[in-house]
Amino acid sequence: MGQMHEAKVPDIGNFHDVPVIELLVAVGDTVKADQGLVTLESDKATMEVPSPLAGVVKELKVKLGDRISEGGVVAVIEAAEAKTADASHPPLGNGARRAAEGKSQAGSSTGSTSATPPSQPARSTGVADGRSESQAAVPPARDAPPPASGGRSENPSSTPSPPSTPPVAFDAATVAPGKVAHASPAVRVFARELGVDLGKLRGSERGGRITKADVQAFVKNALQAAPAASAAPGSGLNLIPWPKVDFSKFGAIESRPLSRIQKLSGANLARNWAMIPHVTQHDEADITAMEAFRKQLGATHKDVKVTPLVFLIKAAVAALRKYPAFNSSLDGDNLILKQYFHIGIAVDTPNGLVVPVIRDADRKGLLALSHELAAISAKARDGKLAPADMSGGCFSISSLGGIGGTAFTPIINAPEVAILGVSKSQMRPQWNGEGFEPRLLLPLSLSYDHRVIDGAAAARFTAYMAQVLGDLRLLLL
Image 1 (cartoon, one colour):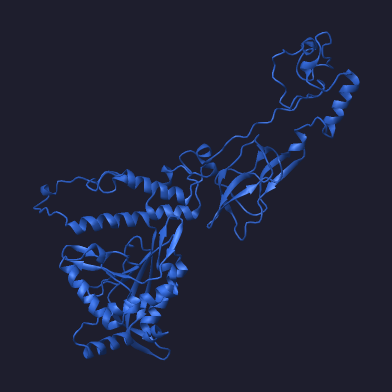
Image 2 (cartoon, rainbow, N blue to C red; image 1 turned 30 degrees about the vertical axis):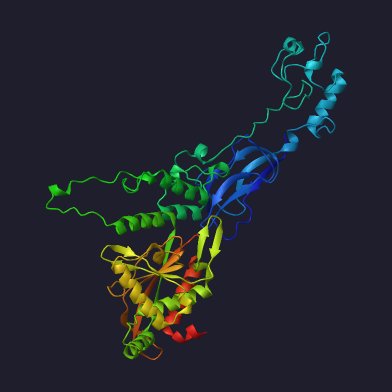
């Protein structure tokens, strides 16, 4: 028997009591050095516990769902040297001594027993291998397969080692079918944001591990397989059918068809919400000084209405310059960083929501932006926008400030990666270090594509926008 070794959990950082989510081997499996034995899953990542050497798994010390920490034993491995022999380098230890004794006693070669001439039957020292004396003397058939040890056999007097069990492919479906979706915490969060049931996916990585690309491919295939736009909503995502209800039996009703804009924007919004992992960052900007300056401009330039939206456009451009990832688009595995600043403005019209684009907002002042904003908003409400008026945007702003609300989650306008939502400003008391004073606070809601932007970057973006809106002199820098 070879030497036994314990496979222990290596250094896994500051994690303790990490659950075992997958068994990669079974007792009797032959493993290589550094081959994964079990998979652990912490709050941040998954990790495999490797085998310290090549050999055979003799015992598993853990099972699915067990929790284990650094230094914990997961398996007992018998070293491979005790299980193999080589023609030019015979094994050391008891096995080699028994083979040598067999040579001296029997005077036969150590080759395959099938090479023994029929006139010289193999000798036996007894029934150590469970056969009688006469049975041991019968030569093997000529068409018998060669021994599993590579053509060599020890003296019949020695107890033969059991054949090594060939490697068995174990994955999540084999170990716990229908119960375990093999995916990292990040992939689980990503799938949950898209509403994808991981139990319906088959991972492309080893052991059936599900990756983010697998989730994206599942959603893409579901959308491509969906029927025409007239089909029931969500039918391509394998959801339960949309409920069909005869509302007239409950009372009087009126049936009104959706407008063309509602049909088009509805399909786009559904696609963007399903395909983009949305996260929304909320913040507030102190616009007390900005509002005073806006009123001063309005009193001086009465030919144009200066709204808070033009200040938001200038602040957004400044933030896009400082954080270029927000002024980008995903193109497969590439990120397209734009050097221009075209800002989309969501406009509520009688026929539905449209998003005309103000081009080169970085090259225009507050008054020029006010004139253009008034013109394009009137064009949108009159239903006279051309496709070119709504294309090429880098970043969108959706303002509900004239209506109300404290916060909301705007849906990203693909292929952009972020959108700013603005709610109604409120006068609230703020502590200035000595006492409370009334300040006008503007709620900001930034939805961003988590594939491109992380939470820290989003928080910096909204904080910088709030800083610029609070002190417009920063726009001059």
